[in-house]
Image: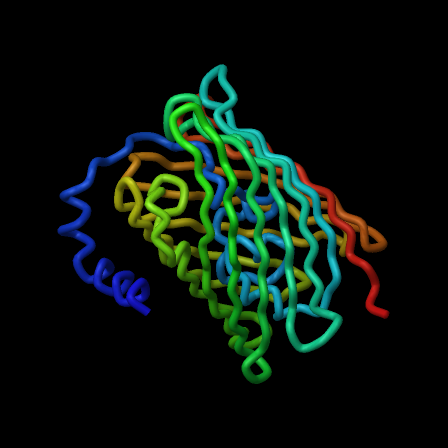
Length: 293
């Protein structure tokens, strides 16, 4: 409860707090708690959308909005100039068919080198639960365990993310999330944050998405994102997104494509900073949806 009160208080004094913290310029590599799967990376704005296993990390409440049993594997590489600044290899499973409570599990091997000399590496484990409150409103949470090592410090901590998801009608959905509600004293890796998003569009034709994200970490960040995807002939999807991070003086664009047939799917995404090829992220994923028994 104290952590939630702090979140509200910081939102109220945001302009003052921002003036008191250093600003990190330019895009930064993913941290172990904001790594992205290919679809969410392509869209850039994902918090108001139900869909893949990405919800474990971005909005666990949205996992309960669809009836599915899915397994996904993902790989991500971030590059800064000629160097690799982060890598992620992840596997996850989500099951909303076994009962009223949806469960999700993900394990990721992460290597992030952009936040301190020679960075950190190790494992990240996420367990998510979600359930409906009524027919169109859902709540959920994710517990994360980080076990990371580095030349200057080790990170061994647990954190909690809580979320809500509201399917207003068939074409409109909303999401709101509070991230990292436990103070682990690692603000670069587990910043206290709030995110909200909206998705508009028929689920089998297209989506337009928008997100706002505010984090209180090593610096205060207000991040705006927008994206869209179009589904083609029930077998393919074309995606694109844009992110504006004024606190780091950076803008990013992303593009991706996905394929699905007979329950098997693949996603590919590329992201780059505007005006330079010095920062770029590539992600690919494979997924299987098992038919309901």
